Image (cartoon, rainbow over all chains, first blue to last red; front, side, top):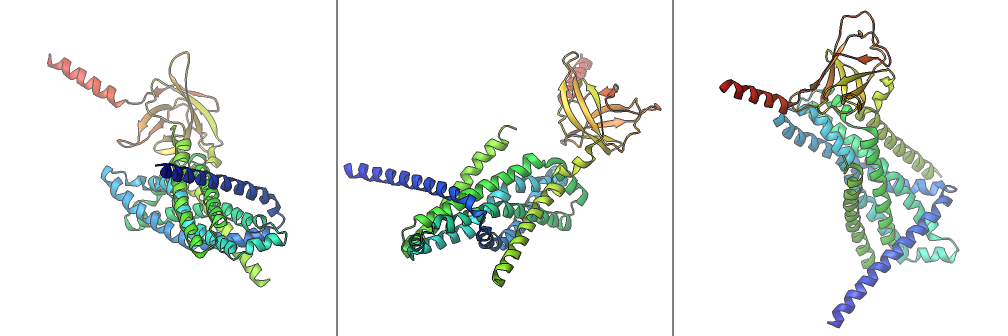
Length: 260
Length: 155
């Protein structure tokens, strides 16, 4: 009995300790960000590996998500004789929800896991300790640029996802199902608000980019320095990011659209 | 160095594509593109009942969009709804005695204001009031009246 309580206590303490370490780690990263503007090429290289290399998966998924939305939305709307509203349905669901959320999930799988594995491996091969020996702060030199890159890439990827998805829905809706292109675009423009819909989507994607990159870098930096530990940390990144994205999405949606 | 340069070019293209996507969302998908032609003149109209009319709802004449609803207020003296309409500037020759009614687009669609031109030679100008208005048709009231008249007829 005592053993059970003790293990529960150990688990609780461990969790809070990790949480605390995570926040200290975040503070350390944020403190390193102003210095990045002096060496912006570090960030650019990371934007390449975090953002540009995620572009293909975002483009293809965005196109297919948009095309599926077009087909499914058409089948439901045609029952009400409202297939002209397909553009509204697609644009609002993509811009408000699917764009930020799905691209953040893909981003966590594609870029987040890679970041964790990279940092974890740097730690287990003691490259980070080596840097410290040379009086280079690894958080400022290695981790802060990656964080900044994630923060820059995520909103851009989400915007590309939404735009490509809307084009995909247009291709299916106009080309395949014969929804008039005038009605498709004009209804979309009438019902989609720039500030209420698009900017809120952008805010969501910035928050997701922040959280996913933070989780990925922390898991990598906190990983047990063995091959098994790095593997586990990579899994945890994807799982925790998915939880964080979906949970935060609910909170943000309730704040943004809850009082309509 | 060559590697460095090509990376920078690719990242630059990525950022440009991302911003272009956002721009496309803003201009092509949302109503932000409309703001340019919104610099017109404002007229107000008083309605007994506006039903489900909302701000930004379209204002049409003969089916052509000529403006949009800018704001809706309750007149504290008459308890009528006071609707401010932003008319697009190119439609500056609308007669003074034009009438306004609230219609519904389709059976379940959104409500909009339809204008019917009058015969006056004078045109509406900024700050003018449209006097001839017809309130929105509230479906429950119509059904209620119908049932009432039917019951009366039976007796």
